[in-house]
Image 1 (tube, rainbow, N blue to C red):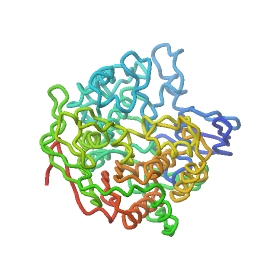
Image 2 (cartoon, helix red, strand yellow):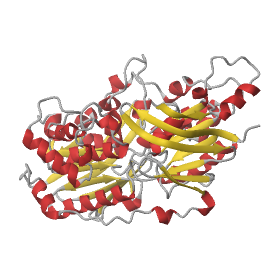
Image 3 (cartoon, helix red, strand yellow):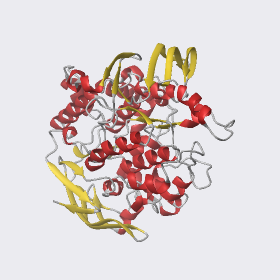
Image 4 (cartoon, rainbow, N blue to C red):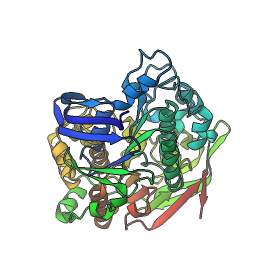
Length: 501
């Protein structure tokens, strides 16, 4: 009997016109569970996609020994079954459909009650998942929902889940397939501190059920049950090592990070607003509910010009809903006492008046942002607050977009479609899009998701430099204490929709 789960042998891997791997060799044996590490763009996600059979193999091959063994042991006819059906991949972005299964969900749908009714509930969505095999069904609905702490969410529409709740739902959906091989692409992004602690136990439970796990992750967040590590570099596996011999410090970025202050000053003076606001945000006893569910309860928050706030709290605390009231996306703002940029909501200002003063990045915006524009076009669209560029490019604005790309070290992607660049570069493009118009308020909701060490440090330094050189007001959301910029001096913490100390 073979000891191999699968093996990739001298493979050349392509996607569209791009060669992703040459002479790729990678094998996983029974009892082994792997973590893939490496800088952003090193090939971690591409390797997972290759294992899952998403890319073309034009040289060499992949042998799925686990599938051959499964077929030999199967008691019933399995002519419909392929190895793909025994592999579950959890990607960074979801692909949820509406109730009629005709279109993708969209960004503002989560805040419009009539539109959000077209979304499945958590229970309905999970009930659409069928096991990949009719035998060996270990991960039942009850067991899976309990493990991923979804019991209290089963009647909630998936469009209204927080980023972290959505990630738990995606892992649950993968488990319900009862796969032989589970591939997880940065599964910890968006998870709060408590859930990240529990994730270790979750992975252990999954592995003990007989599933082989391969996870792309940070060197500092490798689950205890992982046995081996593959370090990727420039589209190749540079090193494989047993977990017990692994030192994450050796993989820490030692790049010296320098910010060009003169260039940043010039960028910050381009189209910068000279209007001084007394109250950027003022909320009095804000109360938001959907049906019987209270999302925010008696929230008071005052943000003045030059304030730099951290907005903290666990998954589902109400942070995204609170930000949607500021960003103009939530119509319930009109039913509350909210002042934005010295004007009370509902006194004649449009949603576009509000958005013109705000630079905004969030996991949800990334999830729903169209990807058929070039990265340069995506950034230029920040001038118009549109999800993509729907008008002819203006050279001076495109030039400024390119300068912001250079500041964020992503200018090599300028002419590449957003969908064809690494997820980290996509996120940085959306950050540049938020910065390009020099808004009065920057809202960065988990901006460092998916960024490697160097990118995180560079972005953090960039934010601190912008705060030092300008009067910008900042709201910064993160689940990682070390990501909070030094310029942040105030904290608002939410839990279960209420402000806590």
